[in-house]
Length: 355
Image 1 (tube, rainbow, N blue to C red):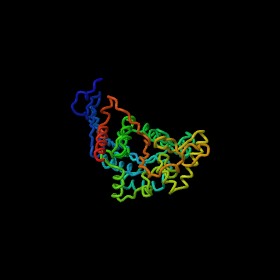
Image 2 (cartoon, one colour):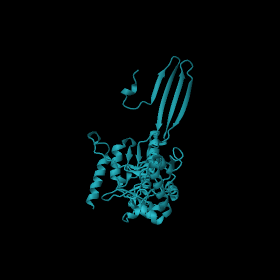
Image 3 (cartoon, rainbow, N blue to C red):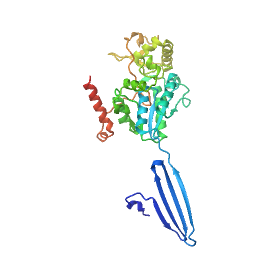
Image 4 (spheres, rainbow, N blue to C red):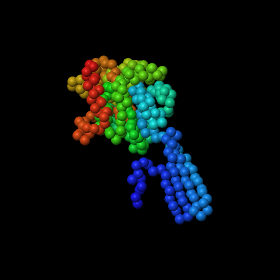
C-alpha cells in the first residue's frame, strides 16, 4: 500500500473516500495556539443525500520533557529557575530526591522555591523501599566513603534517579554543576550520555556565590546550613560523609553530638568489616585513612585531632550524581558529543586567565 503523504509537500490533513453507498470526508484542523485539534467527519448517503456530521475536539497536554533536579542547595535551586525561565513551566518538572537525612530547613527552602518557580517540586525517595534509613545503607555495604564516592549517595541518590530515568521520557536532565565543577560535568557528559545532561549554570558562568546572591535578591532566605558556615546543604541529620576534614572539624566544634554519633558509626562498621572504615583520608604526602575518633584496635591509623585545622571546603551538591568526576579522554567519535564540551574547555581557560 502506497501512502500519498510520501509524495505530498505539506502534511495531508483531509481526505475523501467513496464507499459503495456513501461518501466519507474527514478534515483535521490543528489549533496550535489552543493546544488542541478539531477532527470533522462527514457521511453523505448516495441514495437519499442525507448528511451526518461528527466533530471531535482533541486536547493535547504539553509534555513536561525538561527534568531539573533540585537537591536543596543553592546551585540546584538556581538551575531549576533558569530551566523554568528558559523552557516554561509547562515543559519543566522539578524533582527532589529525599534521603530523609536533610536539615528541617530544607523543606522550608523547598516551599519557598515552589513559590518562586510557580510549580510544585516532586519528591522521590529510595527510603522505605530498600532501606528504612541512611544507616541501613552503611551497614549493608560496610562502607561510608570510598574512592568513587559515598555509598549512601549511590544508593539513595544516584540509584533513585536512574530508576526514575528508566521509567520516564525526557529531552534533557538539568544538573546544578557550577563554574567550579566543569570536571564533573565533563565526566558526566562523556560517561553518562544516556542521561542527556545539561548544565545551565555553566552556560551563565555562575559560581555558588552567584547563586546565593540570585536567591537573596529574589527575596528568599538561603538554607540555614550556609548561614552556619557550611558550604552545602547535604545530609545534616548525620553529617555528610563526603564533608572532608575541615567539615568534620567544624562539626566537632559546633555539633559535638553528631560528631560523636558518626565516630561510633565508623567504629561499629570497622568491627563489622574487620578492617578500618572511615569517611576521611589524609590528602597530604603519606596519606592514609583518618578516623573521627581514635580506634583502640588500630593505633597506627590517624584520627582527626592529628590533622591541621582547616575551613570546610565547598562541597558539590548531591543531585543524583554525587562523586562523579571520572573524566576520560574523548574518543574520535565523541568529538561532537555536545557543544557544551567545548564550552567547558573555554571556561577552564577563562578561569586560568583570571587567576
